[in-house]
Image (cartoon, rainbow, N blue to C red; front, side, top):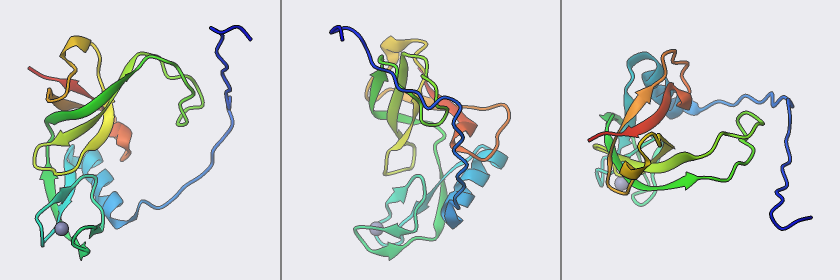
Length: 154
Ligand SMILES: [Zn+2]
């Protein structure tokens, strides 16, 4: 094999017929995305930390969390990467067109980083600390794809 040759293994059109319950917290999170274009977190009653996406227990406090709070929708890029090497997208079984951005975003009011795609229309503006906002899907279905990606705003 030549040094510059790449190996690509595709799963093709193989079906992945798996369903799983996202639980009470995930259900609320995805329902709010779909119906209200709201991003919800959950707040720890002991330390006040806001987790996005929401989860049941604050690990450091070992405290159950029940207070849902709206965060964002804007935020800042905490860290990111730009993918320039095509690989098989496990969601589709096909190569995702490159380049594309993927980042960890600190939504306003949240204390954790939220992972999502970052638009690269103006790649020079993509940097740690850049303000971003979500671009919503026209037809929302209650999945993470209800947010198409985040884009840098001035
Ligand atoms: Zn806590």
